[in-house]
Amino acid sequence: MRRRFEAEDIRVIGINSPLNIDDVACRLGYDSTDGCFQGEVKIDSNDLIVNGQSVMAWYVNA
View 1: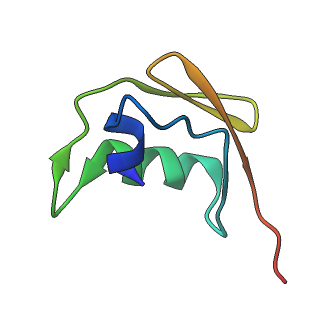
View 2 (view 1 turned 90 degrees about the vertical axis):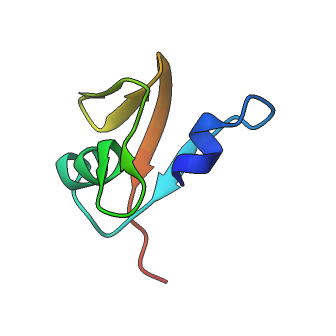
């Protein structure tokens, strides 16, 4: 997922994750394999704000 946020030609508009929004933000910002994300990650209600771009976060179990 991090690579998609770093790519300039891809826009992420939403993610489906069983994790709560705090855990998603933490895993995006701090990864044991890739290290720290060089962008900005914040939470606004149920949305992630990544590098100033709002990303809807929800979980649908199909």
